[in-house]
Structure formats: C-alpha cells, structure tokens
Amino acid sequence: MTATAFSTAALALLTLAGSASGQIGSSYCSANSNSTGGPSVISASGSTDVALNDVTLACSSLPLNAFGYFVTSQTQSFIAGPGGSSGNLCIAGNIGRYAGNIVSSGSTGAVSLVVDLTGVPAPTGSYAALPGDTLNFQFWHRDAAGGSVTSNFSPGLEITFDSAAPTFVQDVYPLLTQPNINAPECIICHGSFGGLNMGQDAASAYAALVNVASTSFNCQGSIYVVPGDFQNSLLYSKIASPNPSCGSQMPFGGTFAGDVNVIRDWIAAGAAF
Ligand code: HEC
Image (cartoon, rainbow, N blue to C red; front, side, top):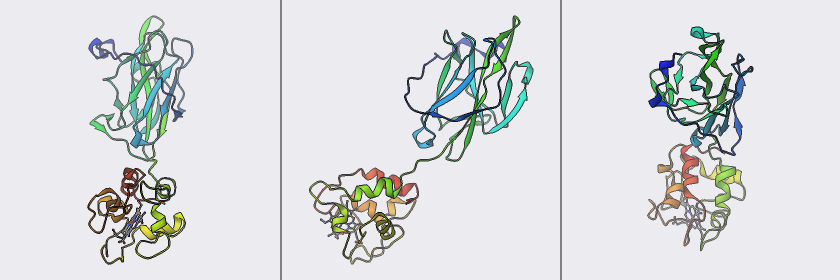
C-alpha cells in the first residue's frame, strides 16, 4: 500500500458505533503486532440476518491517525507479509476493497464502518450477500516500522449470514388467534366447522392452510397458502384485499388486528412451520 493510495478527497470521517446491538462473527487468523506494540482487534455488531442489512465493522488498538480500509472475501487464507506488508493477509480469491470508505483511526486508534450487505465489493463490481454466505473481513492500514512506511492488517473476522424468515408458529399463528377489530379471532369462525377449518392448534391450522385447496362453493380450487407465492395465496388475498377473488375481506365484518405484511413475508419466504 503506497501513500498515494490514500487520496485526501476520498477520506471518510471516523464514526464511532453507538449501536447497542449484539456482537456478531468470530475472529480468525493471527495478526502481527503493529506500532502500538500489539495486534489490532476486529469485531462486528448488528445482526447476521441478511434481510436486516445491519452490520457495523470495527477495528481498535490501531496506531493513531492511521488511514486504512476494510477488505473482504468469501475465501480465507494466510499469506504472511503480502507485498512487503508487516502484517498477514487472511483472505484470498475474490478480494473486494472498501476503498471508497477510507477511515482514519484518529486520536482513539479505532475505526468503524457500516457495511451495506446489498453491495459487498468484489473485483468485478459488487454483490448482495445471501443467507448461508460466510464473509471474511480484515482492516488494512498504514503504519510506520523503524521510521519507514509500511502497512499492517487486523486479524480476520468471519461472519456467516442467515435469514430469520418468519415462521408459522412464532409469527403467523398468534395473529390468527388474537381478537380482531370489530370481529373475533380468525379461529373462532374457522376452528371447528366447514369451509376453512383451522382446528384448535398451530399444527392443525398449518396443515389446513399450506398447499391446501379450498372446497367451499365460492373459493373452490384456490390454494390457501402457496409457499413462495403470496399473490396466489387465498389466505393473503382474503385479508389484504378489500375485494378478494371470492367472498368478503377477512375478518368477516371487521378489520384485521395484525400486520398483513407478516403473512405476506411468511409466505414469500417459503411458509415455514
Ligand atoms: C365472524 C366470523 C369470521 C371471522 C372472524 C373470520 N372469518 Fe373468514 N370467513 C367467514 C365466512 C362466513 C367465510 C365465507 C364467506 C367468504 O368467503 O366471504 C369466510 C371465508 C374465509 C376464507 C375463504 C375460505 C374458503 O375456502 O372459501 C378464508 C381464507 C378466511 N375466511 C380467512 C380468515 C382469516 C385469516 C380471518 C382472520 C383475519 C378470518 N377469516 C376471520 C367468517 C369469518
């Protein structure tokens, strides 16, 4: 890393993370001591749920007023002293650089960066992180060793992303069993007799809804829940639409007390139990 790699025009201000969200990821690969006498520390806070797009990287125990940027790849490695660096490169393969987000460690020797999981840098553009992806990060920074300019690296940090898709038991069934506005609970009218009979527990309700076709005279043949396709799911259109494809909007005679987007997202994400 040369001094010219850091154009002053590209300098970004150091922001200190004030987030109270939890720590995510785990450190891997050893770092060499920098000019503070010890290695730097890398961490991340936020959520591993890609859909929330809430990740803040942080690196501390850096030399003061040192410029650098985070680098990322899905491949781990160990390359000692790449290109004459005093540190170790812990990633390989398609290495992306947050070169547009150069930060200074300032007077605290710490940096942080809010990363956008929908635009993870890569050599050929950027990509969106997906559930199941493991992204590895390092902070690459300038340093001075014995009076000459060098660079160093933080340890690696690996974060495996997931998706906290809504489930029927946790997110949807409670909406079907709570009182509605000017109408009773959905299961009061749909828990013991013909038409849509969701029974008296979550398992019965799930079994009555998912991939099940209506046999009622007016909605006959429509599937209550088509996993992945809320637009063709009768359960969704009966709640969301003032003019569903058959019969009246639900709850009959009243207003849904829950958030219909939860039903939409649950179906869109695959309608898990
Ligand atoms: C006051 C009783 C009542 C309540 C409460 C009620 N429904 Fe209904 N529901 C009906 C009646 C009556 C029908 C049949 C007429 C129609 O489709 O408009 C029906 C039809 C349906 C159908 C179509 C069934 C088929 O096979 O034709 C669905 C799906 C449905 N309701 C879902 C719900 C949901 C979800 C809720 C809660 C948000 C709910 N209902 C609340 C009375 C009710």
